[in-house]
Length: 509
Image 1 (spheres, helix red, strand yellow):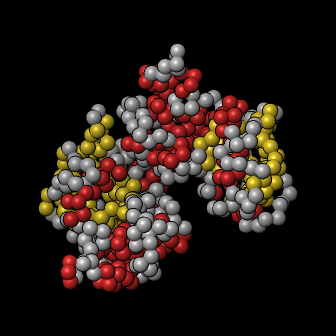
Image 2 (cartoon, rainbow, N blue to C red; image 1 turned 135 degrees about the horizontal axis):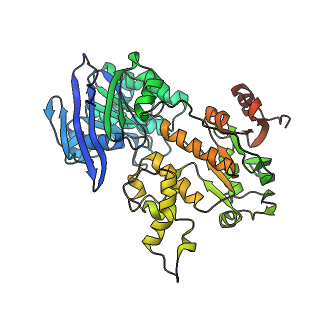
Image 3 (spheres, helix red, strand yellow; image 1 turned 135 degrees about the vertical axis):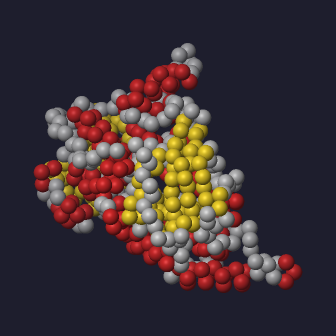
């Protein structure tokens, strides 16, 4: 099938990539990456995890060099050998988690390595602070140029990175999942800044899995799939369903493929669990074949309850039983032996050893049982990991690849595979689809439904209300550290859940 042509644009192309390729050994990360960013426009780059977006961005940023294809900046062919070359020619990348120097001031972070000097070759701090203040005024934000970077919110850190880019007169700004950790107010402030940069004639590329943001902010959308360019369309000429179909190569008719399961006897019981200042008198049960959703506003105490149940965090009163037997408090090893698995919210920091191989990660919890005569070989890890990698359709060229090189969706699958390898009776999973694309979300939801169908008890914590309503047999609502409602699936509505999530008096169960 011929490659679709990019949508025509009346703007001036600032950045163009044409059929760019990149391989890492036998793994093809990018087979035909194409992108056009015009002056005075905001261009969305979307695709499932593993579609090649990050590789394409790293080529533009000078982290990787392309194997083939063309990259043009202002119509001139370029090939960046380093990030310094990319920055020097006007490319700036704003990542989801900026990396500022926490002990330096906001202004010192902006002008690091290029501080203005005055008489006697001394740094002209007054000029530097004045310029930083001018940059923030231009962006319409209020940040003290003299304050330390330490303690700043992610949103403010991103604004500082943008101010740095403007001070370098960047022509192209690439925002890679910039809103993932932001509140609604912070997102709107970021969008206001982005629109002002567009109006100045800069070219912006916006990468996000959130379609409401893409359609609210962006002028055009480029879709990638499996390392290849698929199509470019104007946002006014398309809709979410069309974009999703282009991303996954099929219609995603059911994002929440929940199938009925036989609900058995209680497997996990939590009785009177309390932790001073965190949560109070928490009691619930999860039965075999049941998916129980733990819902509530951010900061309500959902993750803290899950971590205490598994033994990561301490609790002061109450008890946890699994299959009728007590699970010792603050003892994750005992919880694992009892048949509990816990998939944390932050998979990169708490669920993976990113510099270890896929095989070593998957076999991580069961390694003790794989050793023979006290020795554990890589081949034993691979033999153990291969079936689980296959079952979860982990997209990786080899089990010996570092987990750090994988997409977010595949990293999530590796973490799930690691815990399923322990053959648990209870799966506690915190934010199962955060930061992953729509196609992988459907795969994870189908997996959870299948596990419940096989008799596993599942406790699912999620901030996405549609996910809770779509997947849970019952919804437990947490507000200010207390369970305020226990709602069966047939009665769970957005209104009922939000009503319980915003009050502390306990409702009927």
